[in-house]
Length: 320
Image (cartoon, rainbow, N blue to C red):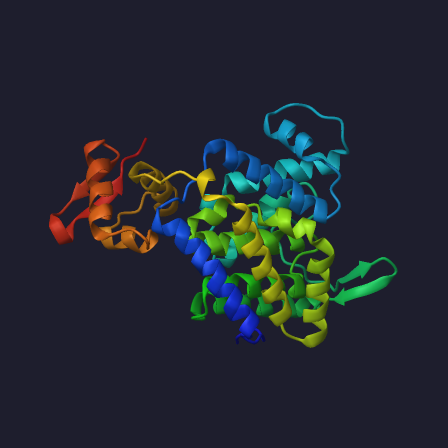
């Protein structure tokens, strides 16, 4: 079953704008941010997502923890940051359409913070905002079927990834599958869905814009709840994505090289054999000639083993 939402003119305009900006990046293969920018943006992402959920640590304190320095702060806040760092360090391992992968991510994120990290709840839960109940989540016995339906939607629906990522984000907040960590997981998994199709999203600090517009974020969630569909939330998150891309200057990016693609693909394929066709399916914006060159150079460098010839060639990463 497809979650309820409508494609409005506003959504179409935002999709066009976001797609144009992504296209400008892809057209010049400017898909890789320098290491310093990637680290800065990841710190912003982690600090922003945790602050939305009440964590008190600053970007400077998150940076210190990332650099293995000791800080004075509540132990719970420190553990939340350490877990989030571990989660983002493992970002290449997660498969967007896999519920098992999703639960594994929650386990890393919430280890030591709740009794059963990585396990969906089987009890009722409500979300309180001040003295008011903001949202009553579906009862425990409905969580597993709803989650199954949501992942089926991710796998089979033909909507654009930009839309599906927003729908998934909202539905996780609505279903509230875990006792805690739902907001963090909704936002993180939207990134996982997007980066599968647009690699630049791995290092875009979307969370920082959400934090800046936190009241609008909660308002969009509330309106979606009351209307029974995620249309308004899709519109809101697309404006967040557009703003994040606007803040990313093309001169902050560097061209992605063949060896970068090979390294990225090695993390994705995890030792399995593959063909040039599979490699091309992962990097949709490169030509056949570029893919052939990447693979040839990796074979010559001793990174890949090659079997077969021409169109029947099969490749496998050598164990290091």
